[in-house]
Image 1 (tube, rainbow, N blue to C red):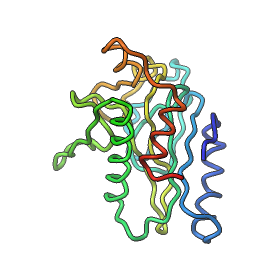
Image 2 (cartoon, helix red, strand yellow; image 1 turned 180 degrees about the horizontal axis):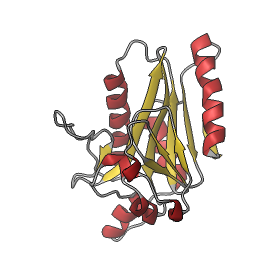
Image 3 (cartoon, rainbow, N blue to C red; image 1 turned 90 degrees about the vertical axis):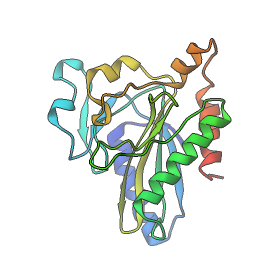
Image 4 (cartoon, one colour; image 1 turned 30 degrees about the vertical axis):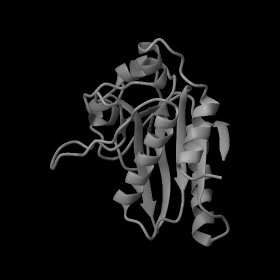
Length: 205
C-alpha cells in the first residue's frame, strides 16, 4: 500500500490499528510504503549523545521499535511491514527484509550487501554498499507474532541531516542512491520506480 507522505505521529497511530487488524484476522499481511517529513526517531537503547542538538531544528521522537537513532525525511522511502510472523524468528524476519531490499537495489543496478554483526559489536543490521556505506536502515518491533515498523531506504534525502546525529549508533558513512548514481555519472531512479522494485522484491502484490 503506497501512502505518500505522512506525519510520523499519524503513521504510528495508524500502525496500531493495522497491527490490531492483523492480530484479529480482519486484514492480511501488508507492506506500507510511505515517507515522512524530517524527523529523527530513536529506540530506548540510544545514547543521548547520539541524538541531534536542539539547535539542529530536527524533531526527535522516541519509538517502540528496535534499533537506535534514525533519520526520516523527504527523498527517503519508508516501509512498514505489518504481518503475521509467528512461524519465523525475529532474526529470520530481519534477514528476509535485508535480502528483499538487496534484491530490489540489484534490480535497479545498485550492488548491495548485508553485513554480519561481530559478537559483542554494534549492530550492522541493514543494507550496505560493497564498500561499507549504509543505504538502508532496519528497525522492527514484533509482539504477539505480528511485526510492525520496518525499514528506511535513502533515495535522495537531504544528506546533511545525517551530520546532525549518530545514525544507528555507528560511525560508518551513510549514502543514498543519488550519491551512488552521481559517482558513476548517472541519475538515481525515480522514487516510484524504487517503490515498485521494493514491492516486487518483498512479495507485495
